[in-house]
Image 1: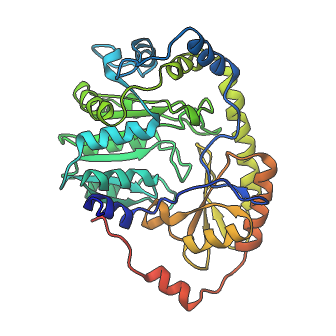
Image 2: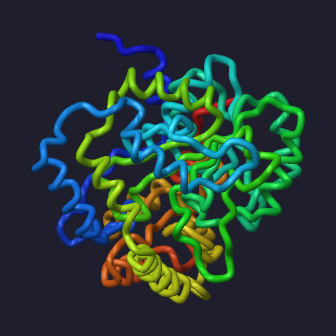
Length: 396
């Protein structure tokens, strides 16, 4: 049987690997998944919902109580306050991103993605039939505003994460305000994926795109319970933004996904009621792990890290050697799993992404193996050069 042409294109272009558990003896620094347990009150809320019979379909846009609570926590705006109708509850942030891209992007529409960027973004644009316009970051991994100024005219959408996966960068208020200026007078939709909003390290402050006056009315805010509350397997995400965009995304979501598990939505309500100290304790764990990563990699010959400002990733550049997909395989053979930098866009080549969402012991073991393998000059073989210079899928 022949699959759809769009799927063939996605297979050709996608660099996203199919991930599996680490083999025995290996440690995984590849997964962007908290190793911490879901807080007990969240689990109890789900169990209580099941016991009282909340086992039927929910409102396809999400429980109204949950949507209203989420709306009340969005940054204030002039005029009408946020309402439940401005929020769509989804099957994780993945489904939120898919819903807005499929609702708003069609064949020929151009989407600007500053890169390196979370690899799902480009895949969704390809699936929608749009065109990806990758814009490389500046050397400090913040936005290159001149490059964005050249790319944005005529774009249907700009899509980014803040804090960033994979770089760990926190884009500043000044950057966001500059983006607003570049988009003045245009119809470009902004999609701001702020999944790691509670994971920001000392010396850095996160400003939501919804707090920027020049961006507020054109921004779709994407969020998830996965990272903040260690709820990856629960699959609770949501988006908020202009009512007409939310309505269109809701139509996509109910067509592809239907309503979210009812009991899980009550668990999400319980998560929102947790004391701030619970979330801060998790964030403190990642801060300590960040210090370990920076200490291991600072001064390691042949390795370079811009210290993460947020999220729980390190985007590590290596000086010499084969393409990042080869390096990832070599490291897997040495029993440490990482993600190849090329997965995240053309500028990601020559990097690997490591996750801090692993136990301290696994993190130390993995870093030791990475430094032992990459922390020295390498000679590139002819086969490696051919792979580096071989055909790449082009999105433009």
